[in-house]
Length: 403
Image (cartoon, rainbow, N blue to C red; front, side):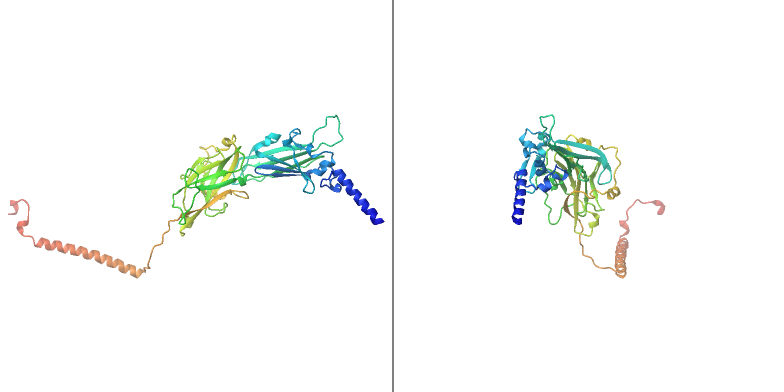
C-alpha cells in the first residue's frame, strides 16, 4: 500500500510539471525561477551571431516563445527566435546575419583608440562591436504582475588580429547580460600568384625560383561582409615558417618599403596586393636552395575608416633592420603566412685538388724560368739580326764632321 502511494505521488508530480511547462523539456526543481546570466549563450561567428536562451525560466515567468523578439521588434516575425525542443532544457534560438543585422535593430559601432600593437609601437586600434537585446513586450496596462525580461548581448571583433579583448558584464534582477568575442581571421588568406592578373597561383619549380623573379602576393578576404576592407600594415619575410624568427627582412612597414617591393592596392577593397623580387637569405649560402616565408600583419577597416588608418609618410623616422628584430609582430596572435618560396641560392660545386706549399713553390719557379727563357731567346735573335746587316743597309744623311 505504501509503495502504491509513493507511485501515485510521483505520478502526480510528473503531471504537475508537464502542466506547468506544457510538455517542454524543463525541470520544475531547477527552472522555477526568473532568468539569470547563464540562461543565454552567445556565439560570435564570421557570418552569423547565434543566441541560445533557456526557455524554461521564460515559461515560469509567464511568457511564450513568441513574446521574445530582438530589440523590441515584436511585430516582425523575422526578429523572433524558434523553439528547439530536442535539447534539455528547451531552447529558443536566434540567428542574426551580419549582412542584414540592422534589419532587426541591432547596432554596429567601431571604436578607435591609440594603443600598443603586437610589434611594440603605438597605433590606432579599432574594434567593431555588434550589440542588441531580446526582451518581452510591455503590457498595455498601467501595472503588471509579470517581470519584464531582457537579455542583452554584444560581440566584439578586434579589427587588427593582434589583440584579444574579453569583457564580461554582470546581470541584475531579471536582466541577463552576456558578452563574447569573435574573430574574422578565418576569412583571410595570403596567396602567391604568377603575374599581375592575380589569376593563376604561383607554382614553384623543383629547382626553385630564379633570383630576382617577381612574385605577386595578395591578402584576400572571403565570405566576409562587404563593409570591411583589407589593410596590410606590415609584411616581412623569414627563413623559417616561424613568424617570430629573430632573423627577418621587411618588405614594407608603414612608410618604409624595400626598393624592389611595389604596393599595388591597399585598404580599397577586400584584397590587398603587392609584388616583390625573390631573393635568398645569406645564411643559406652553403645550400643549393634558399627558403623564404612571407608574413603579413593585416587589419580590417570600414571603407570610410581605411584612409584614416593609412600612415602619413614623409616625416616618419626610418626603421632599420635591428629595430625590426626587436619587435614581435606575432606574439600570441594570428599573422597570415605563405611559403616557403624556394629560390636558387647560386651556390655551385667546382672540382678542386689540394696544393701544398712545396708544390706551390715549384709551380711558381717553373713559371718564372719560362718567362726568363722567353726573354733571353728574343734578345739573342735581336743581336744576331744586327750583326748580319751590311753597312749599306744603314740609312740616314751624310755628316762631313765624321769624315
